[in-house]
Amino acid sequence: MVSAALERGKKHYAWARQKDSTRGWSAWVGGVPFITEVIGHGVRTDGGVAIGPHLCADGKVVWFIVAPSSQRIKTQWGPTTVNTGIEDLANDTYGDPNTGEANLEKIRAIDGPTFSQFPAFKHCADLSFEGCADYFLPNVDELRWVVAAKEIIDAADDSGGNLFSVWKEHYWSSSENGAQAAFIRQPELGAAYSTWYNKGSNYYVVPCRRQIIPVTAERVPGGIKVGPYPDADGKLGYLIVAPASQRTANIKLGLYATDVSELDNITDKSTPDSNTGLYNTSVLVGSSYNSINDNNGSIGSPAANLCANLTFEEQSGYFLPNKDELKFILANKDLIASVDDTTGGDFATMGSDTIWTSSEQSNTQAWIGYADTGVIWYGAKYAARWVIPCRRIITGA
Image (tube, rainbow, N blue to C red; front, side, top):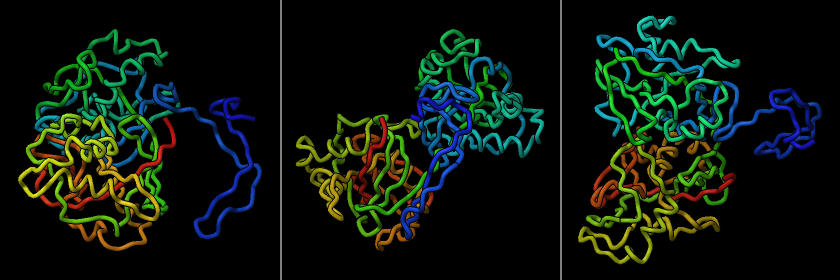
């Protein structure tokens, strides 16, 4: 029986076997139970509409489940006199380092299980819908995903409530702007728009939950296969991260004072790079930039060329990861290190050093990552930093 014929949400049985890294495949075993579940971008699933996959602030790859319009309410965020412990963002340029789920737990820690002082969080924490009860108030970056997918969410919303396209209101995030204000987004104005308002104002709450897609790491020819990873071109696959022996220190990005016009100039840390690291690298090593002398010791982009020219274990096609790909790598660095059988530029050796990405911030700055903390920031293109070459395998569109 093909999977398309299996009734969703019902228990079925199949033959199955396991693969062990040392002993190989096990014998076939019959009668293994499984429950079918259909999920994908824009699919109406249990508890709401799925969008993604997305990479969260805690490094987890998830399907983001947005509660349908019938489960959204208008209420206040909370009091303006309570120190919540939530990260105080000066603006959303810096991105929220904590997930909406983590922010809700901070409110729970000071307000107790009833959430009596914080009605926006209370509605999410109390919501039980279609057998799902783990909702939270999305942070400002997660709310960006919701706004960006508003038409897709509306198209799948069968709940009979007021859709984003009809109910042109402001929506709360769980991200703070000081003691008195929290960030909001207005879907009508697009994903790039955000501002903040007094926490005592009445705005809409869109509860969300997430379904985590387990990340795995495996040593393969050419590096460590880690993922799944949702890349900038919308394709789902795996990154192949060069092992410690193939990472290089003291390399400049190059092209200082050159605006690489084909790349995004990303000034907002929470804004994803619209291009993959593979694309960025192809531009940086292309004929338009490869012979430019930046008068700071570089011709072209040494970091990008190092990756593009690498052949290791009969594998080629390496690139300099973009800022989002590097963020994913650093979020899973312990998992990657656990299967790395080489020595050299391991993450422990890097310490607090920084690592290049192929994402441009301006004509003089590019985005970098801190090996120890995983923080993504930007720095001068003429500085010498680590380079971690990558490849990728595409498994789905």
